[in-house]
Image (cartoon, rainbow, N blue to C red; front, top):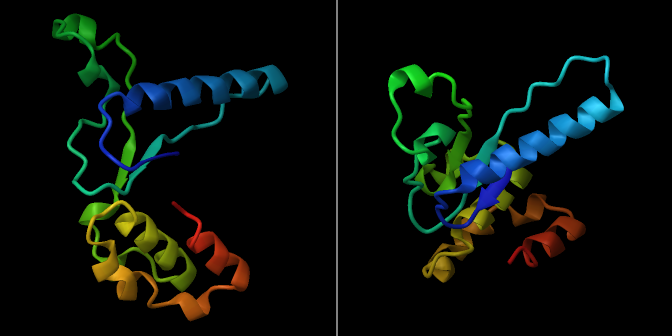
Length: 136
């Protein structure tokens, strides 16, 4: 999982690097076991919507379909917090609070949304409250 505060065109390449490292380490540790499934996810919490393709192949030069099918096929999942209603972020108050903080932390209108971000603060432990206020 990679989180981005603004859309990054080459984030897919970064995910490919992570996947390669994970699988290489796994194979070195468990050479006789099958490789685990690795699901690449980008969590975006920027001011604007994510506007890049989730497919690695879209970073490559245009190639004929006969060649394209041999290229690495990587498609990441995307959680774009900017497009999710605050209450739909999670049913769990703790997770919802942190996701709202991520969603609004980089926005210029953060102060207008503090009540929204802190709506469930009483559900947080003192440790979580400290974490919340040191996110940025």
